[in-house]
Length: 159
Image 1 (tube, rainbow, N blue to C red):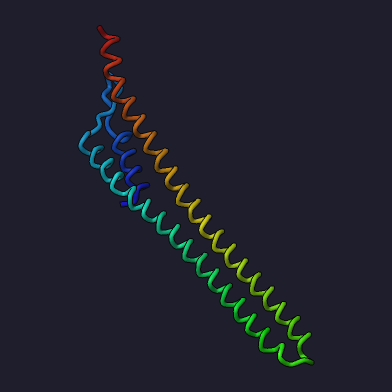
Image 2: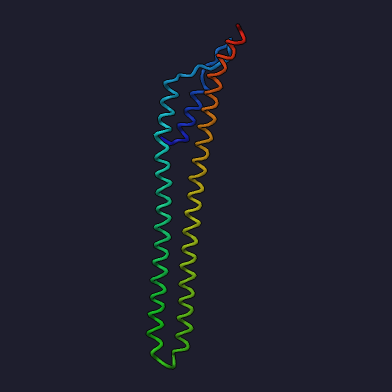
């Protein structure tokens, strides 16, 4: 189950319960809260696995971009070697080869930059989701701790 959905369910379990009029406290089913927290704990490894998979995909994209760039550069060098055999075309061939090498390098740089931007964006998205999840967990834990503390505080006031 999605961690965000589980957090919403936990919030409903904590805030959506009937309030006891005299002490102004909500009744929370500890079994339900425990079940939801266990489900959240179970879903977090999946989200972490997804983040690891994204990082691995980024590495594959970068490696592929580098291989493509190396292939393009090797092809350009082969092309240069073949055309330099003809004396009249040597100068024109050298200029063209240089353009091909420059274009290949630019293409490789652009591809690598695009891969890095993509991976960074995906990681930022995953990081944002994880931060939101952790923030919601902290708030829910604090809410539960406050609800747990308040009945004992009121008992001391009545004595």
